[in-house]
Image 1 (cartoon, rainbow, N blue to C red):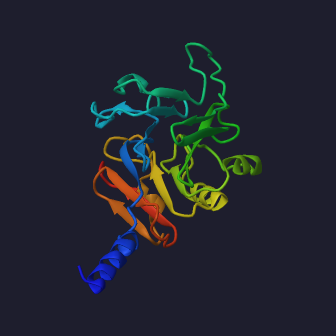
Image 2 (cartoon, one colour; image 1 turned 45 degrees about the vertical axis):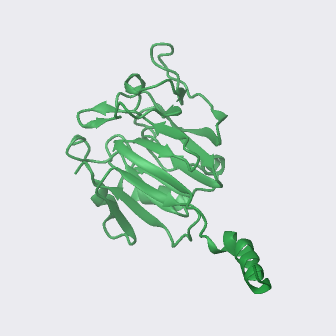
Amino acid sequence: MSKVVLVSFLVLIGAGPHLSAETPRNVTFTWYGQSCFLITTPQGTKILTDPIELKDYKVPYDVVPDVVTVSHNHFDHNAVGTVSGHPEIVYGKTREESDPEQKFIPVDKKIKEARIYNVVSNHFPAGVSPVLNAIFVFEFDSLRIVHLGDLGMTLTPEQIEKIGRVDILMIPVGGKYTIFGPTTDSVVAQLKPTRAVIPMHFKTRVADFLPYTADDFVTGKTNVERVSGHEYAFVLNSPVAGLKYVVFDCFK
């Protein structure tokens, strides 16, 4: 091999890693209806929120999560018995059969690479009902995802501080049992998510008992991205081009 060829070969070897593109690091959201999402981290850890079984809202049998979180114990949020495998179940409240008052359960734990903690909140506006709701926060890969469960009113300064910085916000928008309209916009303004807002718990052909749709929430907003299927992926190592609203249309 000539010196010129050898030098060129060594340069190419040294340049190889710099020439290849960085491997995408995706976090994937799969929506099964209402407030039930499967969040899959770049490492493959599967976090299922508020499992449901209601008509076409259900968790497929072949979905086997590592952990399941339950914001509160209403029927459309706690169908843990329908989930396959042997995931760790993380309840945000005590269950009625063991505690009729259903008290808040503080959580702060590490499951694989994900830190999971929660913040107590109200399910309904003040004066309507004292029922509580657990806001769950998921941290991994320098990302913070907030699942508000069935939040019923705007947040207090203490709650905002405990939640911390927000990258992706999953927020109920359907009304009747949760916040809606201007109150929902106020909560978004309080938490200031950096990447995305994902509406949940809204009126569809399945959840026709709720008064407001996702369209009612995003009307007039810019940077709305609609998902016709059940799955949406965020590429964590790509530039953040402003806040977007990601709307799942698969149950319209």
